[in-house]
Amino acid sequence: MLPLEKFNSISKLFLLSGISLIPISILELYYGRYFSSYILIEDSYHGLVDAITILLVALFLRVVHKRSKRFPMGLYNLENLIVIGSSLLILYYSVDALIQSLSSKSSVPIWASGLTIANALITGSIYIAERKYSWLLLVKNDIAHAKLDIMMEGVSSAGLVIDNYYVSLGIVIAIVAFILKESLKTMKEAILSLVGANCESEFGERVEAMLRGFGIDVRKVYVRRLGSFYSIYIIFGVPSFTPIIEVYKIKKKIQRIVSTLDNVVMTDIRTVPIKIINYDTVPPVGKVNEADRTGRGSSSLANGRE
Image (cartoon, rainbow, N blue to C red; front, side, top):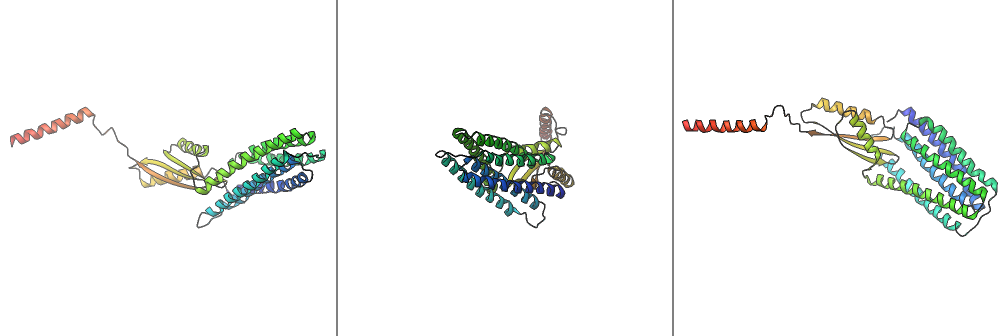
């Protein structure tokens, strides 16, 4: 894992990002209900989902470096439960707003589009600030999400300015579809994390390829999600005659390699012995048979002499 100082810096960045999204999302929700603008309502739900997710990551970035006698598994499970609960709540309100938008028309003043533009500017500022840490996997994923958010905010602003029923309805459907996709993906990962299922993802393949690149005989890599982070279980093979000290060195080498990954909070490493046949000391099949025949002949001759 990364040094504590870097985690604190990234945690502060996520914390400020989440806090900055909440006020504008609340304003969008208020004026969306006031003007019956479902574009503003859906955009506010989207902003609240992002804010909750970012704040959770910020808080748990501070937890992962705290030393304790037991691994704080309950804290990661709590994150999963919060994610599932908030996702279900946002999904309910999003679908409800979509249903209501089908049977109602709204008249929204042009200045209301400034709310979505302000949201886009805040998201753009977050995007620029996060580029400094773009080498970090967590931040890299959030940067990709921020690009989509900026695009959605731009479309929402255009829809408010045009103020056409069908255009507005299309934008609301697009935002709900986006929220639905993100929420279901997040809920799936949270549920798999709660039940402790092996996460078949590119991350495990990346870890395995990285270790093989260092000449380590990796037999299997199991990956489990722990909230926003990963727990990995690595099995590597060594010849059965390998000294214990060499096995220990390989294990420490794996730990150093894995520690460079920013989102791994727990690593378990096991080894399995591999039986190596030294073919240089085993005679060819023909010679073995000849030796057997010679042995049997000598034995018979000896018995005959007796």
